[in-house]
Image (cartoon, rainbow, N blue to C red; front, top):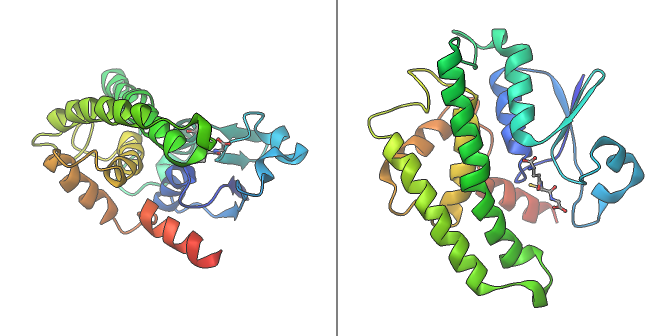
Length: 214
Ligand SMILES: N[C@@H](CCC(=O)N[C@@H](CS)C(=O)NCC(=O)O)C(=O)O
């Protein structure tokens, strides 16, 4: 059975979205980052970067949440009702990859900088200036996606693709940081994505559940 290392509210949610939509049986294995469980030799053998999520499917061990999403869609996309989650034409696949890279490098990167400087770095490493710069950079890139989504239901073409399952999680995170305040089209898109029957929990819901169990 497929194993997913990582639980909400981490980036494991990106993988969970695909596992849910494709109705794939899987086992979720919790790794307590606060307790340093990502640093055990067993976990480092799965991902030397000591980060979640990691997916294990047979002989394949794969990390990087966007790569996991693409793998699941590539391997199991024919299980998706009404067609695959990766576009058929080379051009549309290029568009999908464009937005996946944009989400991971231009929108997630500032979000990660905000997280590092807000609560992950040691007190003497944190910088309010860095947070302000990351918010400015993030808002600029959010505005690009907001423009792209005018009059659209999905990131590429007329159907849901892997890019949408990445975007929904990434924009949920951006929304948590207040970066969607001037992006009404993205707020509406986010709402429609999380209204899907197989949407995973939001970051806020995952965080609340984690705090309740602590
Ligand atoms: N680029 C990686 C980032 C993974 C990542 O940073 N995951 C976080 C949890 S959401 C983590 O494991 N952090 C542990 C650490 O940075 O020490 C991905 O998209 O999978």
